[in-house]
Image (cartoon, rainbow, N blue to C red; front, side, top):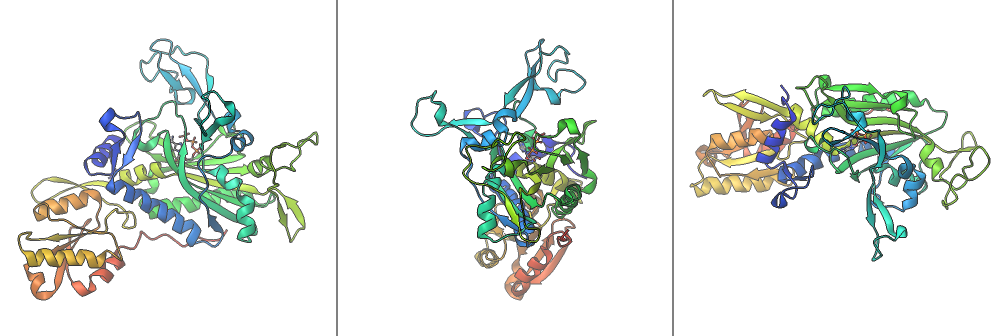
Length: 464
Ligand code: ATP
C-alpha cells in the first residue's frame, strides 16, 4: 500500500528530518526545499546506486563532473537561448499565470474560468552575471545550466581520447540543474533548483536508435524496481511528435503515479531521448549547413569521431536517459510508505525502503539506559559496525517508541542490547518489515547484517 498522496510524504518528511521547507525562518522561498539528515542520506544512496549501476557495473560508461556555469555560447548553439521556453497564459478573470500545456479542459486551475490571453514564450534559463560588472553589461550574462547534458557534450572528445574509448560508450553525470519554472510546486516534484542523473550514450549514426531507446527504458525499469518502485506505479509514455524537444527524434517518458488520488495520476519521472547527432554537430567547427556554411563559427573544436573499422568520420548519435534525483526520492518514499497495526490496535508507519537506500541500516538500542554496562556495550557495537554500514545509537525513549521511530524512517534492523547480552555476548536483531526477532552473537553481527542488507535483486546489466 503506497502513500495515498504527496501530502502524506510532505508531513512524514518534515516530521522525521528528510526534507524541510527552505528559508523557513524568513517565511520560506516558494517551492524550495532543504534535505535534512535523513533526506541527504537517502538522496546520496540513490545517486550512489545509479553511479555504481552505470559507471562501475558496466564496462562502457565513464563519469564526469562539469561546471554548472558554462560559456554562454554553449546555450546559444544548444538551442536553449532560442527555444528553452515555457508557453505562458494569463487568466483574464483572476490574473493567475499558468503553463499553457498544464491547463486541463481549458479551465483556469485557480478560478475555473476559461478566458485566457494568447500563449507567449518565457525562457526558463536562470540568469546570473559574472564578475564585477555593470548590471546591464550584456557580456557578463551567464546561465545556471538547465540540464547537465551540455557539460557532457562539450567534453565528448576529452573523455573519448583520454579514456581511449570506441563507440558505443556513454558518459554519466549527476548534479544540480536550474530552471525558472513558471509554476513550481507539488513538494520536490517541480522546483527551480533540482538534481539530475543524466547519461549520454554515444553510438554510430547507423545504429538501431529506436531499439536502443527501448533497451534503456527496460534497463531503467529494472533499476527502478531494484530501488523498490512498484511496476504498476510506472507507466511508459511515447512522446508524440508535436511534443518532442527540438533535438529529439524519439522520446519515451517513464511516468510515476505521483497523484494516486487523481483521475490523471501520472507525472514524468524521467525521459529517454534519441537526441540524434544534434548536440555534437552543433558544437563543432567543421559542421556545414545545406548551403555549405559553417553552422558554428565560434567553436574551436570538431566533435566528430573517426571510426577505424569503416574508415569513416561522423558525428555520433546519442541516446539520453535523463532522470531526476528529487523525483526519484519522492517516488521511492511514496512506494515505501506503509502502515501496520500493532497488538494494541495502534497504527504505525513503516517505511519499507530497499535496504540499499535506507538512510540508517541499523539502530543500536540499549534496553536500559541507566545501566552503564549495557550502554557501554551498545555504544561499542555501534562503533564496531560503523566501518561497514551506517549505524546509530539511540537511548532517547522506551524500546517500543525507539522501534516505532526507526520503522518510520525505514531502518531495516534494530539491534537491542539487554541484560542477557552482558552474559551471552549476543543481541536481539529485529526486522523492520516482519517485526520478527532473532538472537545473534555480537561476533557474527556485522556479517549477519551485511548478508541481509543486500539490495533487492536486479539482474546484471546485459550488453545490448
Ligand atoms: P517536465 O515536463 O515535468 O517539466 P521535462 O520534460 O522538462 O519535465 P527533462 O528536460 O526531460 O524534463 O529533464 C529530465 C528529468 O529532470 C525529468 O524527468 C525530471 O525527473 C527532472 N526535472 C526536470 N525539471 C525538474 C524540476 N523543475 N524539478 C525537479 N525535477 C525536474
